[in-house]
Image 1 (cartoon, rainbow, N blue to C red):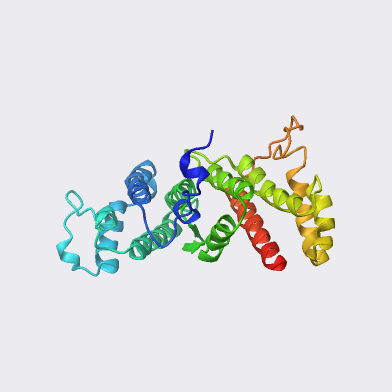
Image 2 (spheres, one colour):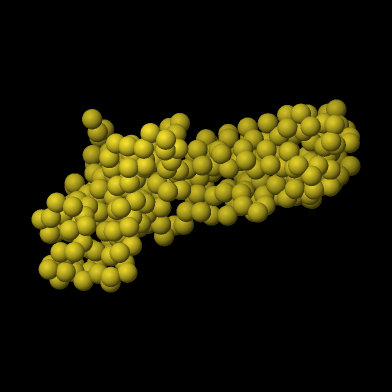
Length: 285
């Protein structure tokens, strides 16, 4: 049973895929990553000399906040710099991500010097990326830098398709978005199914054919000529969703399959299918 917000499209992509802001949930997750970081250092204390977590906080205090080093305190009563900065409402979202990236680079340098297995660095980066993915934050830590993996243009493509499509197609796209955003873990397999079903419903509505493959071939009868390469690409995406090993559009037939769609695949399909519908709408006009 669909809820009011789903039926009337009040669930917006920009509310699900978070970019250019840090929500309270993301802020709490970041603070928790720093809380765990102290434990990571303790777990591998034999690798480091002195007080590495204290040194990290002092480094942030001195070289990120540009405060006077002598005012920081001693290892037994040092300031809690990182989480205090993240929780301060005055600091803009991008400066908070600057702090995370600054910390990642510090940990990389520290572990490069002390520990070839990079335990603390890898643990911290992995935890950050897990939380970013869990909360649909449009960024990841890659090669010691925070990079955007979901652009504003991609979000606009989804919103445009949802706003300009008939109710049945809008329902498929809204459901794909809802399943992608499901907590604690997205239902990515069924999200992909709903995304491709939106394209199938659109093409079947225009042609009267019963499958996407036949509908794509018949679109030209409606004055909609698609370049062959683009048509082939979408036929391959459709074939991917029909594979027995994926269990996306049909029951999972391969008992030995370990395939599980990831969030990146679900988002790619949602963006791609939305963009394709937008493309077809423009071609028809």
